[in-house]
Image 1 (cartoon, each protein chain N blue to C red):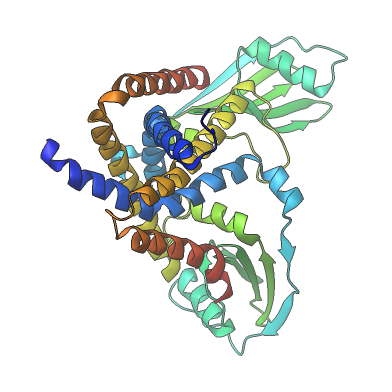
Image 2: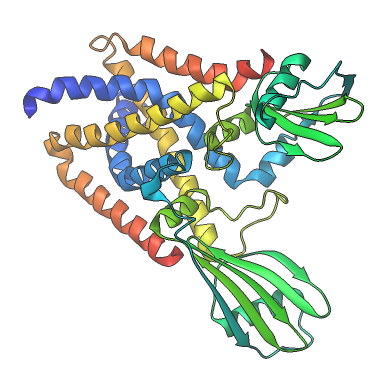
Length: 211
Length: 201
């Protein structure tokens, strides 16, 4: 029986997976490449999103539940308001609660006054360019509290997908080195271009900060 | 089209090899961004000793950015000025390099300067490069030579990646044995992406 870890086997399966994983990730790579370009070129007028945002204010009467902890209270209010998303910026006082619910393309800042039982929602909706930009960076992390985990299941799924795409790309890159090595005699400029890329990366990551 | 196969194959290999280290930066930093809490645990930021010094004078210029650049030139600091905060008493700004943040605070009454440095390490250096030049502070972004160069590299990597996608599809289309399974992989990826967008938007 063939050794599954033999060089021939590894080369064979590496090529197969390079093709299949590359094709599976094709649209994901396209999506993140284009959204990355948008983020780096905020001056592109055709992809403007902030000026085109749609802002609305919604006043809704609510039932204020009693004896609930802050998390249950938030979920109760979100259920009453029929909204979902990643919760952040929670500020609870005896008289009111403020919080933000965000999903790619929609931000809702909500203020609920316990005395009047009124919810005041300030809602911002972005166009498709805005949604693309936000999806590129949407991982539920909080810069001020880096240890916090996403609190919306969908954010977790999206984050997991981004992890999988990143791992797929790492496999494609390292696998491409193996594929090239097998045909290195036909593509003799390979070491030069690879060393140029590696040297650039080493310069930016390790050397730049010490010069 | 088959006559272009050798050329496109060669370009796919050479461009792929060249950008693969950069793609690794972007990919590894995605993992670091998504698991920042874990990164902070295993690889905490190191604060370097604070430096206190004094300028002979504040080299005010026609804009805050030019003033900040003149100050760091006097102090012998190099890097990208991220943003500038100015009030009656203080002129302060961070100066970034991948993996190193230097915060400069200048007292505008006494010309004294406090320099606080944070060694952030290689992982955060990758994170920094991933988000640069980015969408914020576009008016002052690219005020250092390294970021001007990085901006070009980041764009080139994306355009070359787009070329790799197209050339990859072209090369696959000539692999008779892989056509059916490859087609299933594309369809699966398409439905996976659409499904994700459907639940998230």
